[in-house]
Length: 419
Ligand SMILES: [Zn+2]
Image (cartoon, rainbow, N blue to C red; front, top):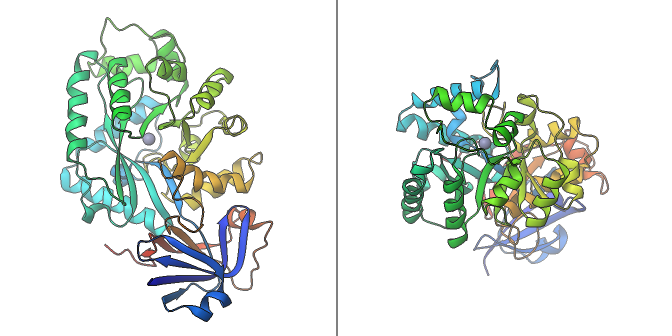
Protein backbone atom coordinates (compact mmCIF):
# COMPACT_ATOMS: atom_id res chain seq x y z
CA UNK A 1 0.00 0.00 0.00
CA UNK A 2 1.34 3.41 -0.96
CA UNK A 3 1.17 5.82 1.98
CA UNK A 4 2.10 9.38 2.81
CA UNK A 5 3.48 10.35 6.18
CA UNK A 6 3.05 13.35 8.46
CA UNK A 7 5.51 13.66 11.34
CA UNK A 8 5.71 16.22 14.16
CA UNK A 9 7.20 16.59 17.62
CA UNK A 10 3.72 16.09 19.07
CA UNK A 11 0.57 14.30 17.97
CA UNK A 12 -2.57 15.08 19.95
CA UNK A 13 -4.72 12.01 19.30
CA UNK A 14 -7.60 13.47 21.33
CA UNK A 15 -7.67 16.08 24.13
CA UNK A 16 -6.46 13.46 26.64
CA UNK A 17 -3.77 11.70 24.61
CA UNK A 18 -0.47 13.29 23.57
CA UNK A 19 2.23 11.34 21.72
CA UNK A 20 5.77 12.68 21.39
CA UNK A 21 7.90 12.51 18.24
CA UNK A 22 5.33 10.50 16.31
CA UNK A 23 3.96 10.17 12.82
CA UNK A 24 0.81 9.18 10.97
CA UNK A 25 0.76 6.99 7.91
CA UNK A 26 -2.04 7.97 5.56
CA UNK A 27 -3.49 5.61 2.97
CA UNK A 28 -4.20 6.63 -0.61
CA UNK A 29 -7.87 6.89 0.31
CA UNK A 30 -7.06 9.67 2.78
CA UNK A 31 -7.55 7.59 5.92
CA UNK A 32 -5.20 7.09 8.84
CA UNK A 33 -3.49 3.72 8.42
CA UNK A 34 -1.20 3.86 11.43
CA UNK A 35 0.03 6.15 14.23
CA UNK A 36 3.34 5.23 15.81
CA UNK A 37 6.61 6.61 17.18
CA UNK A 38 8.68 8.21 14.41
CA UNK A 39 11.63 5.83 14.80
CA UNK A 40 9.32 2.88 14.15
CA UNK A 41 7.72 4.40 11.06
CA UNK A 42 10.94 5.86 9.65
CA UNK A 43 12.69 2.47 9.79
CA UNK A 44 10.25 0.81 7.41
CA UNK A 45 8.52 3.54 5.46
CA UNK A 46 8.55 3.98 1.73
CA UNK A 47 6.07 6.84 1.58
CA UNK A 48 6.78 10.54 1.10
CA UNK A 49 7.14 12.32 4.43
CA UNK A 50 6.09 15.82 5.45
CA UNK A 51 7.99 16.70 8.59
CA UNK A 52 6.23 19.53 10.43
CA UNK A 53 9.03 19.78 13.02
CA UNK A 54 8.27 21.70 16.24
CA UNK A 55 4.53 21.40 15.88
CA UNK A 56 1.40 19.67 17.13
CA UNK A 57 -0.71 17.56 14.78
CA UNK A 58 -4.23 17.54 16.18
CA UNK A 59 -7.68 16.47 14.99
CA UNK A 60 -9.01 18.94 12.41
CA UNK A 61 -11.05 21.84 13.75
CA UNK A 62 -14.76 21.71 12.95
CA UNK A 63 -16.74 24.93 12.64
CA UNK A 64 -20.27 23.63 13.13
CA UNK A 65 -22.04 26.88 12.26
CA UNK A 66 -21.01 29.54 9.79
CA UNK A 67 -22.40 31.67 6.97
CA UNK A 68 -19.54 32.04 4.48
CA UNK A 69 -21.97 33.96 2.23
CA UNK A 70 -21.79 36.84 4.69
CA UNK A 71 -17.99 37.08 4.86
CA UNK A 72 -17.92 40.33 2.87
CA UNK A 73 -20.13 41.97 5.53
CA UNK A 74 -17.17 41.72 7.91
CA UNK A 75 -17.17 44.38 10.62
CA UNK A 76 -19.79 46.52 8.88
CA UNK A 77 -22.66 45.87 11.26
CA UNK A 78 -21.40 47.15 14.57
CA UNK A 79 -23.38 49.64 16.64
CA UNK A 80 -26.82 48.10 16.10
CA UNK A 81 -29.57 49.01 18.60
CA UNK A 82 -31.19 45.57 18.75
CA UNK A 83 -31.12 42.11 17.19
CA UNK A 84 -33.89 43.05 14.73
CA UNK A 85 -32.00 46.26 13.82
CA UNK A 86 -28.93 44.08 13.07
CA UNK A 87 -31.08 41.66 11.06
CA UNK A 88 -32.60 44.49 8.97
CA UNK A 89 -29.14 45.90 8.20
CA UNK A 90 -27.84 42.45 7.33
CA UNK A 91 -30.70 41.81 4.90
CA UNK A 92 -30.22 45.23 3.29
CA UNK A 93 -26.45 44.76 3.01
CA UNK A 94 -26.79 41.36 1.37
CA UNK A 95 -29.54 42.38 -1.03
CA UNK A 96 -27.20 44.71 -2.85
CA UNK A 97 -24.86 41.89 -3.95
CA UNK A 98 -24.98 40.11 -7.27
CA UNK A 99 -24.14 36.43 -7.76
CA UNK A 100 -20.45 37.11 -8.39
CA UNK A 101 -20.14 39.09 -5.17
CA UNK A 102 -21.83 36.28 -3.25
CA UNK A 103 -19.50 33.71 -4.77
CA UNK A 104 -16.50 35.88 -3.87
CA UNK A 105 -17.80 36.19 -0.31
CA UNK A 106 -18.16 32.39 0.00
CA UNK A 107 -14.69 31.81 -1.43
CA UNK A 108 -13.19 34.31 1.00
CA UNK A 109 -14.96 32.60 3.91
CA UNK A 110 -13.64 29.21 2.85
CA UNK A 111 -10.12 30.56 2.37
CA UNK A 112 -10.18 32.18 5.83
CA UNK A 113 -11.43 28.91 7.32
CA UNK A 114 -8.68 26.83 5.73
CA UNK A 115 -6.03 29.36 6.74
CA UNK A 116 -7.04 29.06 10.39
CA UNK A 117 -7.00 25.27 10.54
CA UNK A 118 -10.67 24.48 9.94
CA UNK A 119 -11.07 21.16 8.14
CA UNK A 120 -14.87 20.90 8.19
CA UNK A 121 -17.64 23.46 8.23
CA UNK A 122 -21.39 23.47 8.72
CA UNK A 123 -22.29 26.31 6.38
CA UNK A 124 -25.67 27.95 5.85
CA UNK A 125 -26.57 28.64 2.21
CA UNK A 126 -29.42 31.02 1.48
CA UNK A 127 -28.57 32.11 -2.03
CA UNK A 128 -29.10 28.84 -3.93
CA UNK A 129 -25.59 29.20 -5.38
CA UNK A 130 -24.30 25.74 -6.24
CA UNK A 131 -21.18 24.69 -4.35
CA UNK A 132 -19.26 23.42 -7.33
CA UNK A 133 -15.84 21.93 -6.59
CA UNK A 134 -14.00 25.09 -7.64
CA UNK A 135 -15.93 27.08 -5.05
CA UNK A 136 -15.75 24.63 -2.21
CA UNK A 137 -12.62 22.57 -2.59
CA UNK A 138 -10.78 21.42 -0.62
CA UNK A 139 -12.72 22.18 2.61
CA UNK A 140 -15.05 19.46 3.94
CA UNK A 141 -18.50 21.03 3.99
CA UNK A 142 -22.02 20.27 5.12
CA UNK A 143 -24.07 22.93 3.33
CA UNK A 144 -27.46 23.58 4.92
CA UNK A 145 -30.00 24.94 2.43
CA UNK A 146 -31.81 27.72 4.24
CA UNK A 147 -35.55 28.25 3.98
CA UNK A 148 -37.51 31.31 5.12
CA UNK A 149 -41.29 31.93 5.00
CA UNK A 150 -43.42 32.98 7.95
CA UNK A 151 -46.69 32.65 6.07
CA UNK A 152 -48.09 29.08 6.28
CA UNK A 153 -49.50 29.47 2.78
CA UNK A 154 -45.94 29.42 1.38
CA UNK A 155 -44.83 26.21 3.11
CA UNK A 156 -45.55 23.80 0.24
CA UNK A 157 -43.81 25.98 -2.33
CA UNK A 158 -40.77 26.41 -0.08
CA UNK A 159 -40.50 22.68 0.61
CA UNK A 160 -40.64 21.98 -3.13
CA UNK A 161 -37.90 24.58 -3.65
CA UNK A 162 -35.59 22.87 -1.13
CA UNK A 163 -36.37 19.45 -2.66
CA UNK A 164 -35.36 20.84 -6.07
CA UNK A 165 -32.02 22.10 -4.71
CA UNK A 166 -31.36 18.79 -2.89
CA UNK A 167 -32.16 16.76 -6.03
CA UNK A 168 -29.47 18.70 -7.89
CA UNK A 169 -26.90 18.51 -5.04
CA UNK A 170 -24.13 16.01 -5.32
CA UNK A 171 -23.05 14.30 -2.16
CA UNK A 172 -19.46 13.18 -1.69
CA UNK A 173 -16.48 13.09 0.64
CA UNK A 174 -16.09 16.86 0.62
CA UNK A 175 -19.67 17.96 0.30
CA UNK A 176 -22.91 16.87 1.91
CA UNK A 177 -26.22 18.72 1.93
CA UNK A 178 -28.39 19.59 4.91
CA UNK A 179 -31.58 21.54 5.53
CA UNK A 180 -32.00 24.74 7.52
CA UNK A 181 -35.33 26.26 8.48
CA UNK A 182 -33.98 29.66 9.53
CA UNK A 183 -35.64 30.49 12.91
CA UNK A 184 -39.07 30.41 14.61
CA UNK A 185 -39.75 34.09 13.85
CA UNK A 186 -39.08 33.59 10.11
CA UNK A 187 -40.41 30.06 9.48
CA UNK A 188 -44.02 28.93 9.91
CA UNK A 189 -44.95 25.85 11.92
CA UNK A 190 -46.03 24.13 8.69
CA UNK A 191 -42.72 24.83 7.00
CA UNK A 192 -40.79 23.55 10.05
CA UNK A 193 -42.91 20.37 10.06
CA UNK A 194 -42.45 19.76 6.34
CA UNK A 195 -38.69 20.36 6.37
CA UNK A 196 -38.25 18.14 9.45
CA UNK A 197 -40.09 15.37 7.57
CA UNK A 198 -37.92 15.94 4.49
CA UNK A 199 -34.76 15.72 6.63
CA UNK A 200 -35.99 12.43 8.12
CA UNK A 201 -36.98 10.99 4.73
CA UNK A 202 -33.54 11.72 3.31
CA UNK A 203 -31.50 11.13 6.49
CA UNK A 204 -30.10 14.66 6.34
CA UNK A 205 -28.93 16.91 9.16
CA UNK A 206 -31.16 19.88 9.98
CA UNK A 207 -29.87 23.13 11.51
CA UNK A 208 -31.99 25.93 12.91
CA UNK A 209 -31.31 29.13 14.84
CA UNK A 210 -33.13 28.74 18.12
CA UNK A 211 -33.53 30.35 21.55
CA UNK A 212 -31.14 33.06 20.39
CA UNK A 213 -32.75 36.14 21.97
CA UNK A 214 -35.14 37.07 24.76
CA UNK A 215 -37.34 38.72 22.12
CA UNK A 216 -37.75 35.37 20.34
CA UNK A 217 -39.10 33.83 23.56
CA UNK A 218 -41.44 36.77 24.09
CA UNK A 219 -42.70 36.43 20.49
CA UNK A 220 -43.43 32.69 20.79
CA UNK A 221 -45.08 33.10 24.18
CA UNK A 222 -47.18 36.19 23.46
CA UNK A 223 -46.95 37.06 19.76
CA UNK A 224 -45.70 40.52 20.74
CA UNK A 225 -42.48 42.52 20.83
CA UNK A 226 -39.62 43.29 18.45
CA UNK A 227 -40.20 40.36 16.09
CA UNK A 228 -43.87 41.20 15.59
CA UNK A 229 -42.87 44.79 14.77
CA UNK A 230 -40.08 43.56 12.49
CA UNK A 231 -42.46 41.30 10.52
CA UNK A 232 -45.17 43.97 10.40
CA UNK A 233 -42.72 46.57 9.09
CA UNK A 234 -41.80 44.17 6.30
CA UNK A 235 -45.48 43.50 5.54
CA UNK A 236 -45.21 39.77 6.26
CA UNK A 237 -46.96 39.38 9.61
CA UNK A 238 -50.10 37.24 9.20
CA UNK A 239 -52.76 39.03 11.26
CA UNK A 240 -54.48 35.71 12.05
CA UNK A 241 -51.27 34.16 13.49
CA UNK A 242 -51.65 32.57 16.90
CA UNK A 243 -48.47 32.29 18.94
CA UNK A 244 -47.73 28.72 20.08
CA UNK A 245 -47.39 29.95 23.71
CA UNK A 246 -44.39 27.67 24.16
CA UNK A 247 -40.70 28.23 24.72
CA UNK A 248 -38.52 27.67 21.62
CA UNK A 249 -37.34 24.11 22.36
CA UNK A 250 -40.77 22.71 23.35
CA UNK A 251 -42.14 24.49 20.27
CA UNK A 252 -39.68 22.67 17.99
CA UNK A 253 -40.53 19.43 19.79
CA UNK A 254 -44.25 19.97 19.11
CA UNK A 255 -43.40 20.30 15.39
CA UNK A 256 -41.35 17.08 15.28
CA UNK A 257 -38.08 18.92 14.61
CA UNK A 258 -35.94 17.62 17.49
CA UNK A 259 -33.83 14.48 17.07
CA UNK A 260 -30.30 13.18 16.80
CA UNK A 261 -29.65 14.83 13.40
CA UNK A 262 -30.82 18.23 14.63
CA UNK A 263 -28.33 21.08 15.17
CA UNK A 264 -29.78 23.63 17.56
CA UNK A 265 -27.80 26.76 16.85
CA UNK A 266 -27.22 29.28 19.69
CA UNK A 267 -29.54 28.08 22.52
CA UNK A 268 -28.57 31.22 24.48
CA UNK A 269 -31.76 31.15 26.56
CA UNK A 270 -32.83 27.73 27.85
CA UNK A 271 -34.55 26.74 31.06
CA UNK A 272 -33.90 23.43 32.83
CA UNK A 273 -36.86 21.74 31.13
CA UNK A 274 -35.59 22.71 27.66
CA UNK A 275 -32.12 21.42 28.50
CA UNK A 276 -33.63 18.08 29.56
CA UNK A 277 -35.63 17.94 26.31
CA UNK A 278 -32.54 18.60 24.17
CA UNK A 279 -30.65 15.88 26.09
CA UNK A 280 -33.50 13.38 25.77
CA UNK A 281 -33.95 13.90 22.03
CA UNK A 282 -30.15 13.69 21.49
CA UNK A 283 -29.77 16.78 19.35
CA UNK A 284 -26.57 18.82 19.18
CA UNK A 285 -26.26 22.39 20.39
CA UNK A 286 -23.95 24.71 18.46
CA UNK A 287 -22.66 27.46 20.73
CA UNK A 288 -21.14 30.51 19.02
CA UNK A 289 -19.24 32.23 21.88
CA UNK A 290 -18.10 35.41 20.15
CA UNK A 291 -21.43 35.94 18.37
CA UNK A 292 -23.10 35.42 21.77
CA UNK A 293 -20.83 38.13 23.23
CA UNK A 294 -21.36 40.47 20.25
CA UNK A 295 -25.08 40.68 21.11
CA UNK A 296 -24.45 40.92 24.86
CA UNK A 297 -26.59 37.92 25.81
CA UNK A 298 -26.71 36.64 29.36
CA UNK A 299 -24.35 33.85 30.42
CA UNK A 300 -24.70 30.85 28.08
CA UNK A 301 -26.02 27.58 29.61
CA UNK A 302 -23.12 25.60 28.07
CA UNK A 303 -22.05 24.15 31.45
CA UNK A 304 -25.55 22.84 32.18
CA UNK A 305 -25.83 21.42 28.65
CA UNK A 306 -22.52 19.53 28.98
CA UNK A 307 -23.52 18.27 32.44
CA UNK A 308 -26.80 17.00 30.98
CA UNK A 309 -24.81 14.99 28.43
CA UNK A 310 -25.69 17.14 25.40
CA UNK A 311 -23.31 17.11 22.42
CA UNK A 312 -22.14 20.75 22.36
CA UNK A 313 -20.24 21.88 19.27
CA UNK A 314 -18.77 25.32 18.54
CA UNK A 315 -19.29 27.70 15.64
CA UNK A 316 -18.06 31.11 14.58
CA UNK A 317 -21.35 32.25 13.05
CA UNK A 318 -20.63 34.89 10.38
CA UNK A 319 -18.43 37.96 10.17
CA UNK A 320 -21.65 39.95 10.55
CA UNK A 321 -21.38 39.18 14.29
CA UNK A 322 -17.76 38.08 14.73
CA UNK A 323 -14.27 39.35 13.99
CA UNK A 324 -12.67 36.21 12.50
CA UNK A 325 -13.67 32.76 11.25
CA UNK A 326 -10.87 31.10 13.25
CA UNK A 327 -11.90 28.26 15.55
CA UNK A 328 -8.62 28.73 17.45
CA UNK A 329 -9.70 32.31 18.19
CA UNK A 330 -13.16 31.02 19.16
CA UNK A 331 -11.75 28.44 21.58
CA UNK A 332 -9.23 30.84 23.10
CA UNK A 333 -11.94 33.45 23.62
CA UNK A 334 -14.12 30.87 25.36
CA UNK A 335 -11.21 29.70 27.50
CA UNK A 336 -10.68 33.29 28.73
CA UNK A 337 -14.40 33.90 29.35
CA UNK A 338 -15.50 30.68 30.99
CA UNK A 339 -13.38 29.35 33.84
CA UNK A 340 -16.00 26.67 34.50
CA UNK A 341 -15.09 24.90 31.24
CA UNK A 342 -12.03 22.68 30.99
CA UNK A 343 -9.70 23.25 28.05
CA UNK A 344 -10.15 19.60 27.07
CA UNK A 345 -13.93 20.12 26.91
CA UNK A 346 -13.52 23.16 24.68
CA UNK A 347 -11.09 21.33 22.42
CA UNK A 348 -13.45 18.36 22.14
CA UNK A 349 -16.37 20.68 21.34
CA UNK A 350 -14.36 22.10 18.41
CA UNK A 351 -13.29 18.69 17.08
CA UNK A 352 -15.17 15.47 17.91
CA UNK A 353 -18.44 17.12 19.00
CA UNK A 354 -18.51 19.23 15.83
CA UNK A 355 -17.90 16.13 13.71
CA UNK A 356 -20.71 14.31 15.56
CA UNK A 357 -23.09 17.24 15.07
CA UNK A 358 -22.38 17.18 11.33
CA UNK A 359 -22.88 13.42 11.09
CA UNK A 360 -19.21 12.42 10.89
CA UNK A 361 -18.53 11.37 14.49
CA UNK A 362 -17.51 7.87 13.41
CA UNK A 363 -14.87 8.98 10.94
CA UNK A 364 -13.57 12.33 12.22
CA UNK A 365 -12.71 14.13 15.45
CA UNK A 366 -10.09 11.74 16.83
CA UNK A 367 -6.80 10.67 15.23
CA UNK A 368 -7.02 6.89 15.04
CA UNK A 369 -6.53 4.20 12.39
CA UNK A 370 -9.50 3.97 10.05
CA UNK A 371 -10.56 7.60 10.54
CA UNK A 372 -10.25 10.22 7.81
CA UNK A 373 -6.92 12.06 8.06
CA UNK A 374 -8.12 15.59 8.80
CA UNK A 375 -5.64 17.53 10.91
CA UNK A 376 -4.79 21.01 12.07
CA UNK A 377 -1.07 21.74 12.43
CA UNK A 378 0.04 24.16 15.14
CA UNK A 379 3.61 25.43 15.23
CA UNK A 380 4.85 25.83 18.80
CA UNK A 381 7.25 28.50 20.00
CA UNK A 382 10.98 27.59 19.97
CA UNK A 383 12.10 25.56 23.00
CA UNK A 384 8.53 25.22 24.29
CA UNK A 385 7.70 21.82 25.72
CA UNK A 386 4.15 20.54 25.51
CA UNK A 387 3.17 18.70 28.63
CA UNK A 388 1.15 15.48 28.44
CA UNK A 389 -1.33 16.62 31.10
CA UNK A 390 -1.53 20.25 30.07
CA UNK A 391 -1.62 20.11 26.25
CA UNK A 392 -5.20 21.44 25.88
CA UNK A 393 -4.46 24.24 28.39
CA UNK A 394 -1.25 25.17 26.59
CA UNK A 395 -2.97 25.25 23.20
CA UNK A 396 -5.87 27.38 24.44
CA UNK A 397 -3.62 29.69 26.42
CA UNK A 398 -1.95 30.61 23.16
CA UNK A 399 0.73 28.04 22.29
CA UNK A 400 0.62 27.38 18.60
CA UNK A 401 0.02 29.21 15.38
CA UNK A 402 -1.76 27.37 12.57
CA UNK A 403 0.80 26.54 9.88
CA UNK A 404 -1.04 23.79 8.06
CA UNK A 405 -4.46 22.30 7.35
CA UNK A 406 -4.61 18.68 6.23
CA UNK A 407 -7.86 17.27 4.83
CA UNK A 408 -8.11 13.62 3.80
CA UNK A 409 -4.33 13.32 4.17
CA UNK A 410 -3.67 16.12 1.66
CA UNK A 411 -2.29 19.52 2.57
CA UNK A 412 -5.21 21.88 1.95
CA UNK A 413 -3.42 24.97 3.25
CA UNK A 414 0.19 25.67 4.14
CA UNK A 415 0.81 29.39 4.17
CA UNK A 416 -1.02 29.94 0.92
CA UNK A 417 -4.49 29.11 -0.26
CA UNK A 418 -4.47 26.49 -3.01
CA UNK A 419 -7.38 27.92 -4.98
ZN1 LIG B 1 -26.24 31.76 12.10
